[in-house]
Amino acid sequence: MVFIIDMTGPQLSAAFFLQMFCILAVCRLVGMLARRLGQPQAVGEMIAGVFMGPSLLGLVFPGLEQQLFPKESLKFLYVGAQLGVGLYMFLVGVEFNTQSFVSRARSALSVSMAGMIVPFALGAGLALALARVPGLFSE
Image (tube, rainbow, N blue to C red):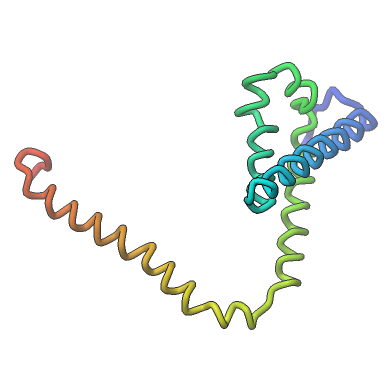
């Protein structure tokens, strides 16, 4: 696999660390704001991801988005993001408490089953009612 890159190695390094600094700073700030509003920090971090992404930052400030996230550096940022997700999942696995899982398995099962059975039953009932409507479905 050959990469055609206009940026030099030091420029890519500087861009990567600047991107990581901005992403982490915005995630931290929005996460703290979310906690003050009674939400989990992870919710704030997800909102920060929307703020920093092309859907909002690219729409409102396209020049800033192009400066902060040049196209040549996005592949390296993607690799760093995947490494971060892998490390996060490792830490989740290390801290996994099986006793807590076993004690809450019944309630989790009932909630998940209700979340599947109720919409399925409503959809099946609606399908039966709509099947009687003439001209809605072909023979």
